[in-house]
Image 1 (tube, rainbow, N blue to C red):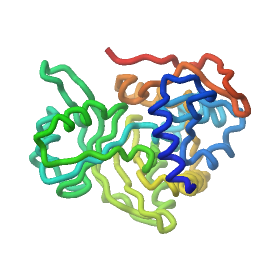
Image 2: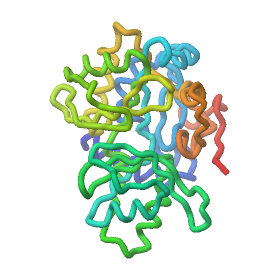
Image 3: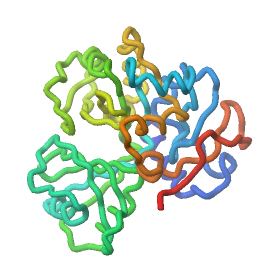
Image 4: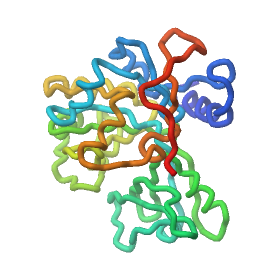
Length: 296
């Protein structure tokens, strides 16, 4: 079984057995870049970010937390829910679902998409990227509201859960642009804020998005799961001279605090577990530094 098939099979099993006992019934799911990440995971501990186990720290979580100010970091946000919405009425459906005006939504553009229920309460919020005239990708802590609304019928559109098929790596900090230009061999200065376009890493197509939550210059890389290991390792190598740090699970929640953002746990840290595990252990777990909570 190849990496993509294995990742999708494990993802579906974890969703089906989410409330089952860990390891004994619910399988452990790691990032598709787990092999590359494990080389820097000297402590051998993991935290659960949604369905995926990520290294808790690579060096020191305080040092990692400050990397986006002095140099840059690479962090793994593959755990976020990712749904592709496509079809002749995809834009009309998304316009009806969210409060944002999408009438001038250009291909390659990114918008913060806030979705409301019938009472005007926020049901979901995340990032919406337009890939083509009739194709969009919505990324959030949970896309369940979107999927449920579309399932009610009446729209000539469809949605596909592509979560296990795509990785999301965030590269944030003042050295992020230099790191990614070295990585891709491409001039990325044409990508404005909340815009994206395709590039390549060693011949592998990736989408580069100019976005972030750190308050500093930042980007995201979206690409195919089967190449996640190689691309993570290539990002680390490209940023080595610039002082790039790999961002662990403990440092991830720190990033939105500096620019004054207060994202909900439902958006940035979906179903964050209150347990962590050590490499080589089975069902034994210890309390994590960040406990589970859901936005009210």
